[in-house]
Image 1 (cartoon, rainbow, N blue to C red):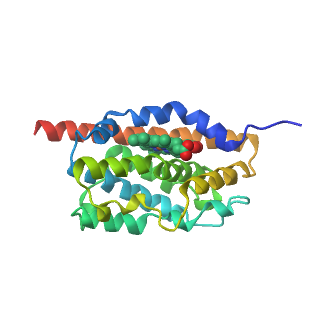
Image 2 (cartoon, rainbow, N blue to C red; image 1 turned 90 degrees about the vertical axis):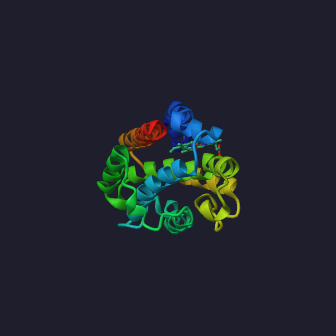
Image 3 (cartoon, helix red, strand yellow; image 1 turned 120 degrees about the horizontal axis):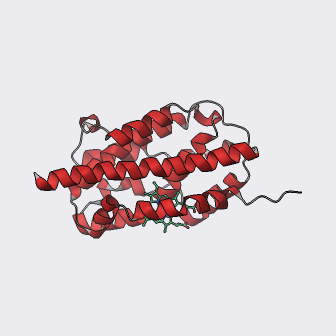
Length: 217
Ligand code: HEM
């Protein structure tokens, strides 16, 4: 009998370095240190609105592939909170901030997937939502502290319908571990998680460029 490393562990290990690179990316590091401002956060967040719109559209589309049914939990859905936060950040027309080139590619890639029937969508769902449930909480606290963002501007990070985030993440990981995938699909899923991290990193690089240009203007 072959023993498998649980999928949740496999993808966490495979993305560990990229996770650390994301945390240490110039844009995120400066954001967290209080070296940017609320306008920079708003630009970042408006970019996320493009991403979640694509991700959440895919996450309600099609029949879930067998064994993935419980993964697509609508308590994770962020679209309403994004819209509300953007309004409170003074952006009534989110489309007025165009996605950066890397975000456009990220969104195009997500749109190219075949909804919940496509196991690769799991990688994008995992990378964003587990991130929001984890480091996202630290981002919210620091954006409030450094830039005076109000609760109304940070509802994205509050998962009011999920009473215990730690337990939720545990149960999410056990759903991952129970996914019925062939060895080839497991490998492709790991690669897709790495791709998701790469897209996020490239967006941070774009945003860093924007900040550099804004500070020189
Ligand atoms: C300020 C930046 C960040 C901080 C401080 C941070 C912090 C953390 C921490 C402490 C955990 C572990 C939580 C736990 O074990 O339950 C975690 C997990 C995670 N983070 Fe981040 N993170 C950051 C940025 C990101 C970014 C940019 C992404 C990707 C877009 C990301 C994706 C993830 C994922 C997918 C997990 C779940 C790992 C797993 O348990 O499988 N994080 N993060």
